[in-house]
Image (cartoon, rainbow, N blue to C red):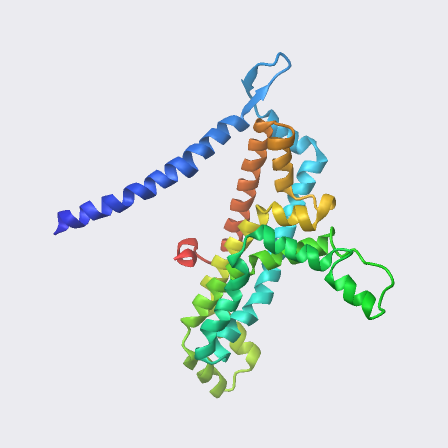
Length: 285
């Protein structure tokens, strides 16, 4: 019996190891090697940190890097603020018979690709779009207003494309919370704010952490939404990586930028876990 269990363990372990090795570890090692290779003046590839030095020597690179990090944190926080009341309403307020229906409504927009969803927003917000049509029809403005290609539109698009990845972990964690905790606190005279901060938030901490990690990483690595809704002024770091790989065909520089982005996301997630005193394995379990 023990041998059969061990055999089953190894059979299921092999695909996981292959997946990690072939799709993650080996490509990352190759990119790391590529980022440390630099073509000198004699057009000979040598080992060097020059690709990383270029990042710090050029203001536009590291300023875009910091800007992307700050916006990714802000989008994560904003997504949490918007989705938490939705998750709480679905799990604790609405009748259980309708909660599954509301979850399906949340899922519906994500049955289509991100590209289609972003183009949907551009149809609404562009100068000749639906919103401008109604504003002009009602006499609020005589000419079209360009709502796209600014930071506000970009943030709205990023929040919209990330909402489901925050809502699902929150719903999952809140569903496991016994309602009697809230009822008991209410009967003992606790205010709504006290119940929220002393019971609801601590109980759903694992869902908040796992949702925040996923949303932050998706936002930080997003290319499509900042490019389509933020326009040329979006200055998202993934666009710098794309330009190095595709436009400049400088794969060594692009690989260095990719590793800097990986280091940034790892550091911010580590810092967030330390500040909130959460455990990564518990949050993702």
